[in-house]
Amino acid sequence: MRALTTMFKKLEEAMTAATFAEAGEFETARQLLKTNKNARKRVLLGTDKPEIAARTINYALHLCQRLGGGLEIFHMLHLLENETASGLNQDDEPLAALNSSLQEKGVIYQPVSRPGCLADEMLKHAGARRDILCVVFDVLEPDGTNCRKAKENMIAKFQALHCPVVMYAGSSVRA
Figure 1 (spheres, rainbow, N blue to C red):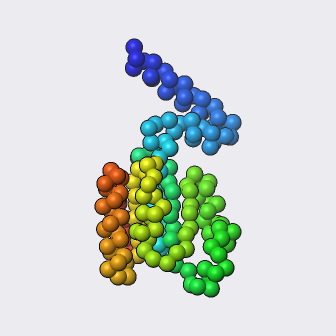
Figure 2: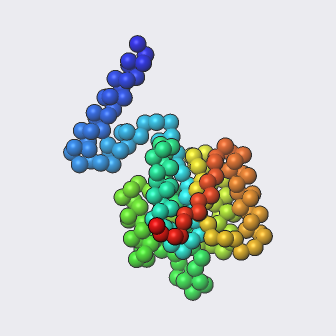
Figure 3: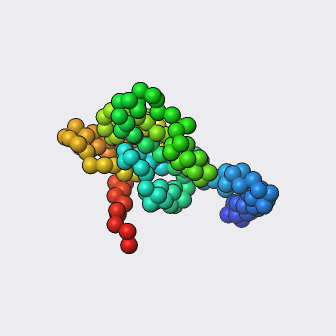
């Protein structure tokens, strides 16, 4: 009897979401369907590449679909001193375009400009959080031993929190 009640509840939620979708309220419908245990959790994509490849974002979005969570992008930009002095602003044309396209998909985009290693900054950003399902790490090759040690430290700390770390290296060769 309990299984039948659960099935009817899920059917009711699906029909309610379908009603909102038919009325053009797609975000509300999407939120109604996200009732699983990972609905409020996120996959954290960390990168320090100058431009995020669409293939990398698609990989992370597919991972989110499989895990049932949302996507958050932590993008560490290495800007020159004169660019940093003017401030990192999401109103800049390329960042604004990327941010608006990602917002349509429900993705949180956080560009950051700091000196240092991506691994250290990601640990500061997400080390104490409990809403991270998985970390996708798409990084340039580290410059020195400090960055390699920071990366190993980050992987160990996230694994201690039972948070898997995926090292993504998208192919640069087109087929």
